[in-house]
Image (tube, rainbow over the protein chains, first blue to last red):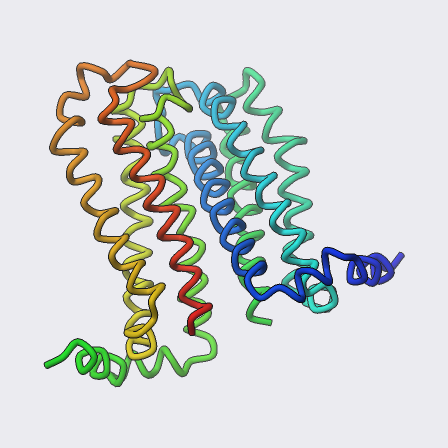
Length: 156
Length: 163
């Protein structure tokens, strides 16, 4: 099934029209998107580097992950809520943009991996050994891919 | 020699011209500059949130600062090198850019903040290392840091809109 009809619909929404008409909305919302990136990236780095044993090795990894989880989820909410209007301003450009497609793919994988695997590992007793290191490595690679593909949208 | 002349000279050097005219190098350096936000501002904000008593309350302040701030400094080095390259490549254009000027002032303030923090309240960290909520002067430093880095990201992004 093609997603083209969905993008056509999105392109005809009031939000899309408003974003195209405004000269400053895109800039302001993009700043929020960047601030969300800083926070999300910071939390992901701290938690995953702890799982890898690079930082805070003497402090419990599960507690650090649990403690920072609200900020991870909060910054995800900021990124999605700012990302939707950003896409709405250039819906069809995004549809045909290879970097955007890759970013959405990596984002879905990163999100699924976080809620399906990463969170289970940091909530379980298995926070030592090779499993948390593997999970942290995959997590870092996925989120970095989301970021790189996201930056590339503007270059294509 | 005026500042504008210096910018003009930097702008016209070989490496600056090569970077400005490269269709591959410039976007790569710019992407590194943007994504290193996570390593620099993202990690320092975790330390700030610890100083505010919002996250990692059970971990000693000195451990959080000691283990996380080296990441921040690594991020800062990446930001400074890539930022200097981007600045050199567009030195003349940036000279009159108001967002760029504001960003430079904010960067100086953001640099002063940890210098003041480490030479004052942080010196007595052993006395409040385990406090879930550190003393008010530490919390003030954290709020200054969070505010400054937010403003730096915002002004940094604004540079492109004045181009």
